[in-house]
Every structure is written in C-alpha cells, then in structure tokens.
Amino acid sequence: MPKFIAIEPLEREPLDKIGFTWHKDEDGEYIIKDKLIALSEVEAEAYYKAADELYTMYEAGAEYVIKNSLFELLDIPSNLIAPIKKSWRDERENHLYGRFDLSGGIDKQPIKLIEFNADTPTLLLESSVIQWMLLESSSLENKKQFNSIYEAIGEKAVAISKGDRGEYSKFLFSCVKDIEEETNTTKLLEQMAKDRGLLTHFSFLEDIAFDNGAVLDESEKAYDFWFKLYPWEDMLAFDGKLNTKVLNPAFTLLYQSKGMLAILYKLFPDSPYLLKSSFEPIQEKYVKKRMFGREGANIDIVEGEALLLSTEGIYEEYSAVYQEYVDFVRDEAGLYYQAGVFYSGKPCGVGFRRGAEILDDMSQFVGHLIE
View 1 (cartoon, rainbow, N blue to C red):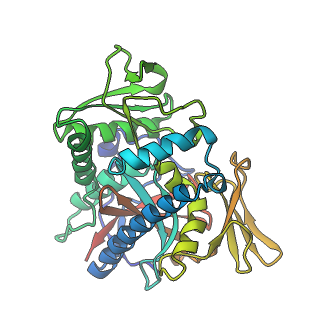
View 2 (tube, rainbow, N blue to C red):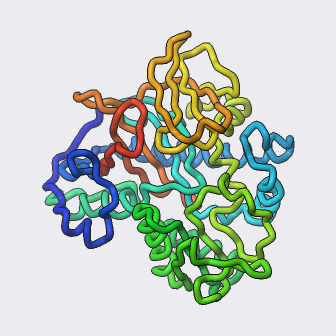
C-alpha cells in the first residue's frame, strides 16, 4: 500500500484563483487535499531512471517504425506520414513535453510502462503547480518533491527557440474553445514560456488562420512556433506545408500510438519496464487498448476466454493492441494508484492518480513529497 503523510487541507479559494475550476467528481472534489504520498529518495530516483530509459527506447522505436514503414500498424493516417518523417529528420529536439503513465514504483512494486501521453498530455496544472501548493501550504518542515515541471518546460521552450529560430522566436499557444481544462493547460504552458522571456500569445483554434505556410492569430500576426493542444490523429487535412513549426511535432504521434507498446516489446523484450505487448491477443491475462484511446475509454480486461471488465467509448474505429495485465498499487479501500512522470528534455516530476481498476476522467489526483 502507498504510505501517506497527513497535511492540513488546502482551501478551495487559492485553487479558484489559479483557474482550477473545471474538474469535480460526484462529491465535488477531485484533488486529494489532506494527504500526500510519501516517496523515498530511492523511489523518486527510480521514477526518473525509468522515464529517462523509456524515452530513449521510444526514440529507437520511432526510428524502427520509420525505417521499416510500419505506419499502418500504428494506425497513422496516410496524410501524416510525410510530416512525421520531416519532423523526425528536422525537429527531433522540438518535443516540448509528454507524460509517462506507470504502474508500480511504490510499495516495492516494479515500475512498468502503461502508456506514453506524448502529444496532448494534461494533468499539467495539478502536477506542476497544485501538488506544490499542497506541500508549500502545509506545516511540514520537509518540503521536498520530485517536481521541476514548471521550470523544465520553460527551459525546453527556450532551447527549442534558440536551437531553431533564435532567441526571440514568437510562440502561439492554442486549444479549442469551451473545454476549460484544455484552456487552462494551454495558458499554463504559455505562462511557462513567457516567464522565460519568450514572446507568446494565446488564441483559440477556432480563431486562427493559415496563409502561405504561416499560422496567424486573430490579428493576422504570424508565429515561428505553434503549440496546439489538439490530437495529431484528428488533423486529417494537414499536409505538412507550414513554415510555422508545430509543437509537439508530428513524430510524437508515433509515441502517442499505443501500437508503440508492441514495437518496444519486440525491440526490448528484456527491459524491466515493459509489459508483454502484441498486435494479436496474448495468452496471459491482458488489457486490450485502442491505438488512440483516451481517458480509459474502449478498454477490455481479458483472462482466458473471460471478459472481466470493459469500458465503452468513441475509439472503437482504431485498431487494438494487447498488453499484459499488471496489478496497480492499491490502498486499504481497494483504490488503484498510477504514477504520471512528466518528461521535458528530461524526467522532471511525478504525480499520482487514484481510482477504479480502469482509470478514467473521474479519477482523483494525489500529490507527493520525498521523505
């Protein structure tokens, strides 16, 4: 079971002030405000090491897919193959951030990769800011966390700017209207870049335009970089003919595809971080996932001929990948815990979600401290 440290509950007012208003479960709460998961230094270092090695494996996996033209296996839309190849060749260092979802790591359970949210990861405000607020507002003397997410993403944005277009590049940050979580996530990313002295602007996707290879905001100003919190797999009209560089780059769609789980297992079958995964059903108890499924939708847990658990969703159109089942860390109430390790040039922080056996958008966020 996870070890907890009790803290004084964080009031709602400071959360409302930073714009955290979008997520409420049935009892009105989403953030666990009165306790933190206690990690040891060794456990925190193990999460860092796992994410660092997994990112290197994903780079090798992407190279393998591109070299062997395995895009169809990963359900990559045909119009995005050329942009993926181009961005892999020219924009390898432009991956702003992603999040590894991992089982284990606490209670002496081994760390295992569940998936990599490499294109449009959320949980950013919770992991980078709110869990820090929980610890900082407590009366605990020890206030150490594995959490430099805010600083790391800002530093990565600067590195992308200097490495490609110079120190004074202009960044446009965009998401769709009317989804409060995505708006706050995108504006937080903009603030991270702005705090590092970069030139930034926010526009909703519905308000931008494209002209002669440039991305324009509502005032028809052009930008060097365009971050879009919008899934690559849904950009079915994109042909890659932009002078504006897109963040995250198109190649991150390879990382986002759960088909990469089977590719990595083929390339690194002895890795301690990988679960057996295949494009065909396996003999072991397994989890059937859709290539671009999100938030726990369209998941089946199967053992032998028995369907143990299943969720519905909108991702049935995508092909499936089959991943060996692993039991998550559980508490006394039987709730399941999953770690989310952010990566921005390097592993830079961890937060936790707890919920049912298949974690969905009603799961709760739990912060941590390092003892």
